[in-house]
Image (cartoon, rainbow, N blue to C red; front, side, top):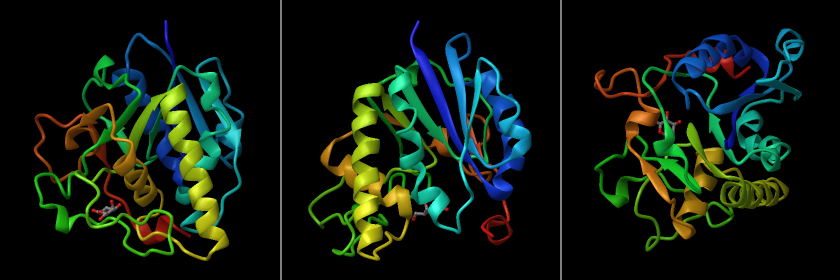
Length: 226
Ligand code: GAL
């Protein structure tokens, strides 16, 4: 059976979201498959919880926006060990079954804020100093950063590419407006995803309730990003 890793970055105050997310994943995420929860954290409680399906990795907490920007650096530590790797934001929750329909080489979710909107409204990076920059003739969808993934080979290549692009940006003191999400969109503008999921896989509390599969919880951004 294929092995799957679900990666979560949970440093600083984000550790508090982990129990609820993992409980919902055990119930709804690829139920019956061989799933390992890969948790990147500085929480002593989580770090001592290691079990066969729960793998915490010691990850220092850094000032915002580095924890989100360096997600690909963390994931490339583990990606080779699994047939498929997915990333999910810590402050999300599975509310309906997410099954084999997501098992593909490069899997992206259409951002709920831009679904059905024209290309000129997308918030692609336009600063040419950033490696995430997308020119006016590129890009067909705007993808959300909060849930994404794919196969060892294809998502592995994507995460290594984004890690290197983000390193270059940091050396040049350029930070893309939407951080990792900008780089994910940049990568996908050149390498289109093999599976495009609807916004139900990265939905907001305000969206229709009857089809949502993964929901972002309401949160106090400023308090969490300390
Ligand atoms: C917002 C979302 C951000 C980012 C942004 C892109 O709705 O909260 O995380 O995705 O859209 O424009």
